[in-house]
Image 1 (cartoon, rainbow, N blue to C red):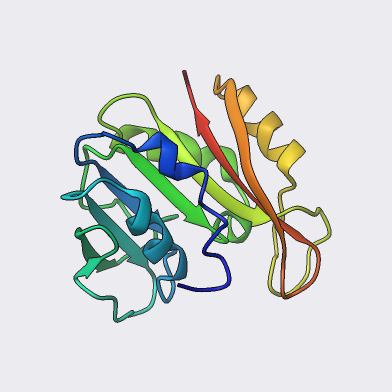
Image 2 (cartoon, rainbow, N blue to C red):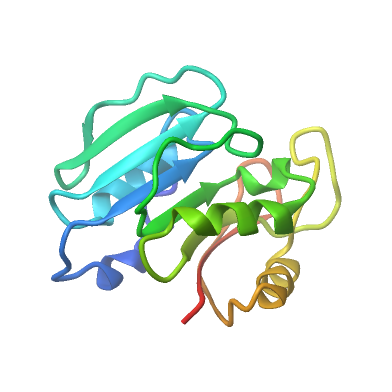
Length: 173
């Protein structure tokens, strides 16, 4: 698939024998992580991929997962959907200054228990590409303030840009 193929491998057990689900991918970019998520979601699932700039993503990915791309600013716009089972934010949370406000805003889109899959760089030093970094420890603290007590780091990998990236699942129960 790509250099991150094994990065989301721990998700395979989470979706075994599951019914179709609907996820949002916020800040999907070219779809690198959209494609990885689609490989692990149950057949018949769907992903609404959202980015500020036009992207050309296939309408079907992975395990017969429907992908619907929409142009929105997920930080500032009201998103045109509800009833999601999960939200993927892969290297997009580090563009958000007020992360707490965004998480609170996103909670209204969930069908049931809010579940986030976050992929980020594990450092705290800002740079031009990562203006508001959040380490795994800071992320756990942030979500704990909002009563999310189940935070599981699912993977860690060296980044081609230096440092380490982490993936984690976060839910309220």
